[in-house]
Image (cartoon, rainbow, N blue to C red; front, side, top):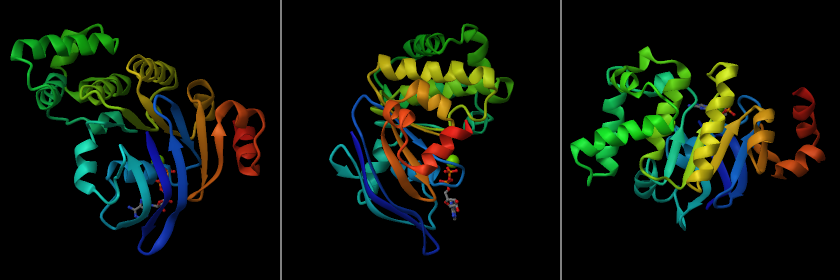
Length: 250
Ligand SMILES: Nc1ncnc2c1ncn2[C@@H]1O[C@H](COP(=O)(O)OP(=O)(O)O)[C@@H](O)[C@H]1O
Ligand SMILES: [Mg+2]
């Protein structure tokens, strides 16, 4: 589904990501873990084509038999269509001057142009109910600042799924949320992933979350992958000292 080969990222000539490789199988759940600053978010940004302009890349990111790094126009096309992105800070990721309805309707019109205005309204209701937002009428009229972080993250998950993506890249999707809400949002994300047979790349530093939700893992440290494999096997018997330390720490 997605193959990263010897990916390097440089900032001001300095090699920050030092040649990482991993392969995500279709329909699988893959965790990229590591402490803060290890290079998780820049890897995700490289896949999506969202690195800042001062970043230089080397290597390959192959999706749909296309090396996204050498085909930026295709990468832009895939982003928000086949490649869905769930960001870390849900409240800041929605437009503060647009209602939830405006967000949803804009995305629906862009990706499902065949739908008439009345069908869009029905579709919005259906989406909010599927996100377990039962007071959907009120939510549709709300602005992001009137909603909790968890509600905003539900909306972002809904928005990301409208184009029928193939893979979801979720960069610390629950880190900004209250602990009690984190589990609900994760189970919603996993339920959607399973129901629509999607592939999930979950970026996190939360190993408990990985144990509950992912099949495969790569452990990133200072821009390099130090261990990779099946979650069950690595958690039972970590081969690398650093993975061991991470497991001890949680
Ligand atoms: N815009 C930038 N300019 C220079 N260096 C950056 C930039 N963004 C990230 N970095 C460097 O990349 C490293 C990895 O960052 P990041 O991927 O955000 O870490 P994390 O694993 O916490 O998500 C950081 O330590 C930082 O030094
Ligand atoms: Mg990050």
